[in-house]
Length: 294
Image (cartoon, rainbow, N blue to C red; front, top):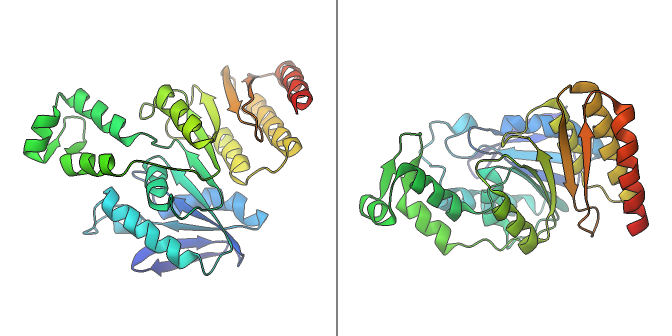
């Protein structure tokens, strides 16, 4: 796969794929890098897309950079990158992971990319910070007075960060697909459901999954969703492929709940174990009901 090293206004980036008028801007999460986008690019590029991934401050090739991973820096950088992308690509979509998804939404909510795929996104940063403060036993008054307070669990609480979050509420209206694990410790069910209602996002919930999606079957399904399925038939076909994949690769009983086929908020579950013959018929019954509803 063709891979080019770039610098965009001093920001290191990797561009995957052959020349195209379609591109995904890939924004990694904490402890990630532009290089991790290669996995997604292996699916997106053969489908006619390029993938442009940047290293955020303190990550990848910028681990020792003077810039810090704070929203007033990252959002400005992403806006600069996006402005440079617009004359080059006609179709721009966003792929954001964890806090990278939140940075991308904050930076691009007025730019209106074509679509977005968000993986384990942070959708309520204020609530997350307040939860960390409670875990550390730190009050707002204490944080205000100190400015920054390191915690025993490796996080540094920041008053300027909290103030920035409160001063910049999220207003995300871009057509969005979300992949979310129901055991994600950073975003609770209530916060995710509120985000879905406010934004109209299509939500896919992996029951028993983790904040970090990394197994082969998780990534297979993630890649299929990311390419933007255009029809109900295609949506069903890809989910069936994933169901078969799970039945072949997993001996553990778990399930996948998928919300949001096309414009409707359908919910259905695939139970995967070791026997495709058992769970595929159950799944096709749900598909029949879904088609009748359409």
